[in-house]
Amino acid sequence: MTTLVLQGTGLSNSIVQSICSEVGGKVKFKADFSTVISPDQLSAEQIQNLRQRYGFDINAIPEQFEPDKAALLVTDMDSTLISIECVDEIADFINAKAEVSAITESAMRGDIDFETSLRQRVWLLKGLDASVLEQVFEQRLRLNPGAKVMLAGLKQKGIKTALVSGGFTFFTERLKQQLGLDYTLANVLAEKNGKLTGEVEGEICGAQAKADFLIAHCEKLAITPSQVIAMGDGANDLLMMKEAGLSIAYHAKPKVQIEAQAVLNYCGLEGVLGMLQ
Image (cartoon, rainbow, N blue to C red; front, side):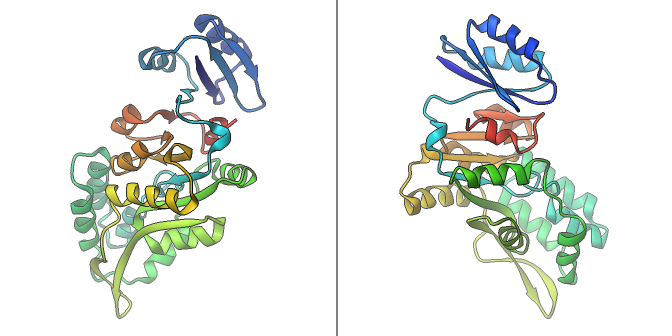
């Protein structure tokens, strides 16, 4: 049996009925999404074929994931919960955005090691006035569409939320307070005399740190990884996503879309809730 979740503005009842007939399933119409339950186990190739033919998100609920038992969402920050890459925007204040963005893009695709890429990018920020961080937060940082709807829905279901980032605590801690998140993990930008030193304090929060965080919080909450949703857009999210019961690629890089169990390319973050009904 396969449960398909269909959602996005391109969805219509007639198309849902057509897909239902194609897979020999039964349909349930909801306000913001529809589910099609097929008696057959659809292959990844069959699901990908459907995705290529329609302009909305089509995902299967993984066998090991029980939506009503979900207890924790662990999400990336930059280009996932929020619409920007913070380090790129910081670099814009020293006219180095293009150079830093190129390194960021390469790291998110998985072409270069994340830890090395972060040190390279942070070094380019050396000497920048630390007050720029506040300007980025206030003037440039925006939540991605559907973020508040998603977080309100998760809270209503009693699902804890964690923000893990290869970015910086300056932003994660403010978002935690602003949005009522439960946990955060990120990197600390070193400062001296009000200037960035071009270094990161302590160990870097990279791919393995994100995965370790997920496992540690499963133990802390006395839950299993199968009860966790992990969401991201870059290659440094993949180890974390592999540990979770449900992994979601949000408007992600190709490598992440290939390896994730679910992809959201048309929906905003509210699409996470459709996977939990």
